[in-house]
Image (cartoon, rainbow, N blue to C red; front, side, top):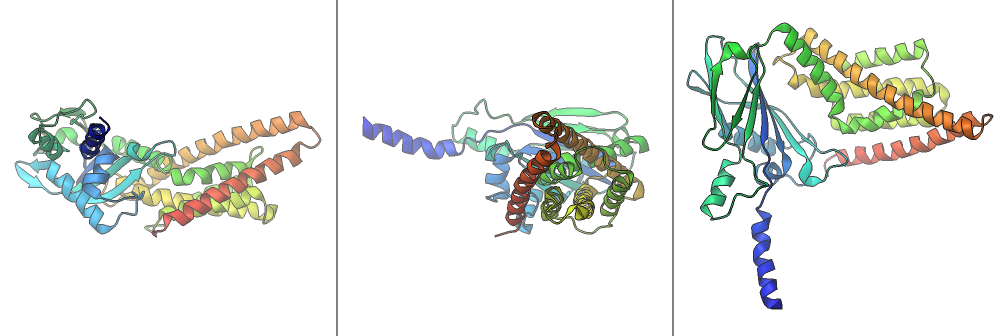
Length: 369
């Protein structure tokens, strides 16, 4: 019996390894003034194991061969055409998003592909069958399609007439006039705002920096001069042309903000460190948002609207951090009114030490081994 059980386990191991959970792929297709942009959001495990082949999976610094694999796979499984003429997409942005509370299998792969511009009088059509080769492989091998396997593609197309298509095996085609998918200036402005907000919310590397900044600015409300300096630094960072904004820049920003919060370099250095941290954050966020704006070459209106979105999200995060710090300050006062400033400074320095360690570790990990 023990031998039989061992044989069963050994035989079931390889089969179970290929029982990938398959979740619907979300695709968003936008007809922009100078291109078609397609955003793909998919559960990461199949992409990592069978398409991209990177372990561990970096957040954004993918090598050229991995990007080529992702681009080729999308072009094979999302086949767009205008008036029957096939279009080929070019990968312009890529990322792997794994929240701190998510395990390896729960991350998301996000891709953006750019296609040539099309005229309003044309008809846009296509087919989507992501993971179809895996589905057919299981069927050909006599393996069942498990309840954890959902081979749908949800395709949304914003425009004058917003459309959503549920594409499934055997019913994977869609078609609509290009003019219906074209958006106006107001809709594109709102899109830029959304991209700016998302660049902050979707960058976990910068969250520690925002928390450390809030801690450094606490307690109370910053003076007008200090707030003006921070706004100027944010504007300089966001408007720094096409200077790169690598992932490690957000960790550097976090280290600078932690140094400001800890006051180890003196209280006079805190405003300068805070400004440098916010400028670095805005440079990274702005750089990440550029490929996602509704033009191939974003102009000042698009970049300005995205900057407003970034600033709004950052201010909301700083306000939330300030509220937490104010609560901690009141707790210190309740413990000892006379020693409240000293107690708060000690706790702030302790938290700043933790942020400095986290950002230092993140900075080291962000460089390839």
